[in-house]
Amino acid sequence: MTNDDKIRKAMIALRQSYELLAELLPEERGAQLTSSLESEETVNKIRQVVTDVFGVDPCKKCQKEETVLARHAYRYLLRYITHKTFKAIGLITNTVDHHSVTNSMKICVEMMDNYKWYNRYIAECKKRLRNEIEQAKLLM
Image (cartoon, rainbow, N blue to C red; front, side, top):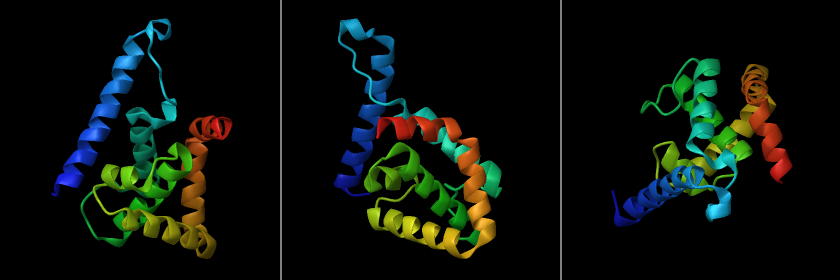
């Protein structure tokens, strides 16, 4: 792991710590919360929904087809709902290369266009994450 990777991970940890502390401090005392969509809770919920729908954990270090397709869906939904950067999504999904994330986005869209079963899986994920998607649309 390079120093840049270590710094990125530390920055994510600091941001998460800030969010937790800001929740404890009342707003009138100076706390400023960012969107709840950026929280670890939302990220975990998206991961759980993808795991339930695809039947495999998308963050599992494995190159089996079902795991890779679930990982593409997970990255796509993270970007679609949380609007996190490609680098942040890469760190969440156990890669430091943002090119892997952009490739996942491209493949996921192509899979949805070409395969009805994959499109149904993504639609089911979106249905289960409806509240988060509505909140994301309000913030745009």
